[in-house]
Length: 155
Image (cartoon, rainbow, N blue to C red; front, side, top):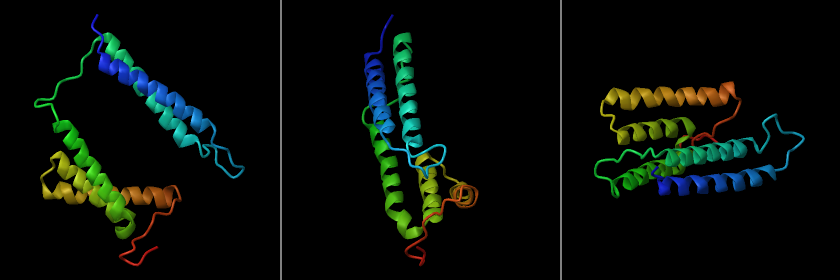
């Protein structure tokens, strides 16, 4: 049986990191005003998700299932990831100035264009509808106010 050492090492590291993360999340104090999820709810979910991914990586390495090699390999996947990170960085910078809904629509359009969407209808309608749906979900369904636009005079 061939063990993929890289996957095994990464999986074990993810499990150790998840355990440390969950330990730190367990130290987050619960407030008397907190809801049923509490302040530690999201950090705990992230920790458990990281632990599950680590276990899956370990299992995959022990079963010998090698990941598919992307043609070209090398630095290309890393540069693509940096491009996505740059788009997200732009979103973080622009969101306070443009407002949540517009910045989210631009983020989705930039991500779709970067992934290869070329039709103008896809790059305009889908992000606009998705941004509206996200805004409606957060503001009206969940009752979480979204930041307005500094440029358009919102708070």
